[in-house]
Image (cartoon, rainbow, N blue to C red; front, side):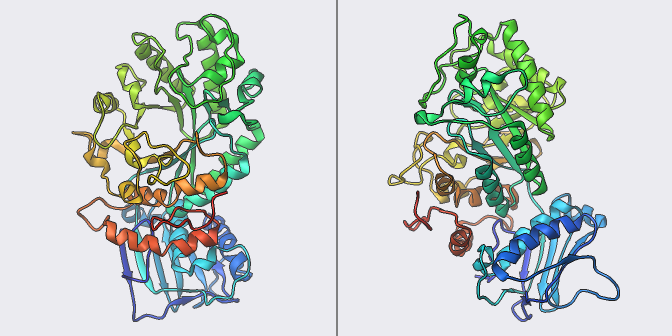
Length: 508
């Protein structure tokens, strides 16, 4: 196998065995100008701790051009037709390393590939004694899908801003560009809403198992969103309605049909809660919520959930979804909903569906999902039996659940094709792929790492790399590259699951 082992697999990669490798030394510089300099700063932040080198980020000049030990970041809009908005070229050789893209995002993804060319110790946060060489290679790369997502459920177990930012730093390794935050559920409400203090009071006071819960301040949420944006990740907030709403129903009595506040909930059952969809109080509440969340989140999307609303009167559910998606659109956002919302035939224009049934669709899931496409929208694919990160790996996995068809191995997570799930739904109608992590059993950052990695690497390759039978995905090739990743997981402090039966570090 080639010494160049990058995940996700690049579109076109040529290792040049006869060429001298690129070597990073104490005098190396990062040469970048304009918007490329901010990406250069991020690269320097990755490389400085382990190398101990100063690695200044500076403008290239005619009088002091790039040398053999320098890394050059170059933005060239003329490359857009070939590379698109997120593609890049990377050349690594004895006479220097050059990263070229049409946009800063493309340069950032080139950085993720470059760091994988160096020894795994490049990821450590203390000075290491290494020869910092990157194999000679020429890479031209661009993604298959524009939506390459990971979802973190902070409602069932609350994770503070530092934990979320740490998760962001981890997922960008695999060129993930969407962080879907599941902010509200039966067990907790985690985002502040002006004029609704009890949502982050009573509504945020607990979590699964009865822990202390918690919520973000406006400043903390804004910091998470900004931190993600600096790393070219769009935050998508989810306010799950009309079901999964016990936290809101415990905070405000008038949201309940009987005008009686519910008790806070700490279990893991689903489907028992619902807003009173006919109540004026509900619609005033939703108008306030969507307005506030839209104002706090600069990205284009707002997810309204819509799944497992088992106690919402079935005849009222489609009308609720139609009205809720229209309300989100009125507040300037593109609505997203889980595929059950396809029961409505009056979705706001452009509403996106998120499919979470199985690779072999259950019951009427395919019909509901394709409803979004028939109404002019698109789909995000998150089939639970292969893409849900909270499912156990095997029978011995100490955390996670196995409801989605049983354990999901790393190979299961890798060997599925988005375009083969829903008849008649082609890549043109598929916005992308997302891997959700629900946190019923996930209580610590180490738990997040263990269930997320390495399966997110597998799903990221599905989202980025070309579809079979073209150059892209092959399990044997992927598993060989993944084997080389375990020292890197260890260097990063990621407690990844090892399919060979040994965790790369101990679960807390």
